[in-house]
Length: 529
Image (cartoon, rainbow, N blue to C red; front, side):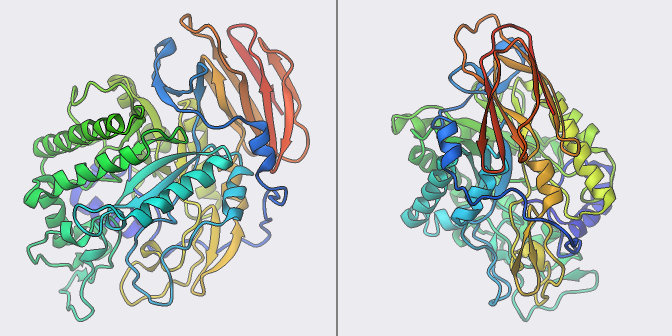
């Protein structure tokens, strides 16, 4: 996951205005208290059956360029918006408090609730340390847990983006219990990511500048060793991805692979670009080799920039690959975490510009707010409007955050007391599920087009008013196309006006409605209230 507030303050002091364009999410334990009066959101007692009956089985996705704009598409000539949440239930996090687990398994109720909010994707966090605890050997039990999650999502017609996640390099850079840190520094908690055998620090200090998660010399030493391929650990990471891609090579429910969560910048711009270019080029090549060896097809590669994007050196060099199945997957926490040097709209504009320049589709891998104050909810709604305007999918951070998560504990020896405000709240310190967060889910589960023939040209969705306007056009090189499918939340049947489509058919499903219509003319437009 993303960065917490104290880390952003420290990086801001080090790097100044470069930081605030993107960061990572979560809070270091200072989330707002849960507001009274939240309801439980859409009922999920009806189960996933109606969704599965209303939608066909998931099909493979790809990056298309019909109409001149790169976008995610299906095999029926439709632009697909992948909207949903990050899910950390398979994350191999350091457990700082033996009484508080960092994660708990997802339940059928979790998956049903995601479907009942119209989600079409989960960004599923997986950890290198759990996947390959012994060098050269994939843990088959962990691999099966990934398969099980993909299958559970697919049963609800939810695609999966498999995300190789890391924060502060991994579990094995926690400060020893008896460490004494000097003035201005503090012991570091362990996080998630690399296995112990790939954690090369040369005994560097684990103490971090206060609040600076990636600031510990040991973290930076581990990243440096990785980028420089000491002891072949970068090659080992690439080989692991090759085998993971092979395992899902024929799986259409996997939308694609997110290569490496929030890479840390440890070199100057020129060297950083060179090293990241080498890494990403090798990863794309390895993934394609693994898919081919398993008789599969090329999945979308979701490529993140180094976390300080858009400062120089944070994106692979132009031409680093000739692969055309790339989606740019930056994170957008502007005005949510750290100093607000760019607005959410400006940050989205930068992301759109980079994706357009490179010819990549755009997908926002993380975003969110962690308080339900009026100010933060305004930021969230403005982000949603900017995301709609960019015609971009994305995954909100995150479905649920346990009290034992390092993002909640923050510093060794502490016990979180604030409610963890995510799409589902958790009351600390007792780690009690406090129910769905109505205000956040209203935005994450707002009306949107799941699939639109040709390409989208306009999308405006107002979660407060419950309205949706979506328009599109059929590209000249498309002949046969599938139906338009819209998600609309709520209990009452939506009122629909349409131009260029047949009469939409409304199907009641848990939490809302699926509107389906054949497009009969181009351009077309649908308005829902």
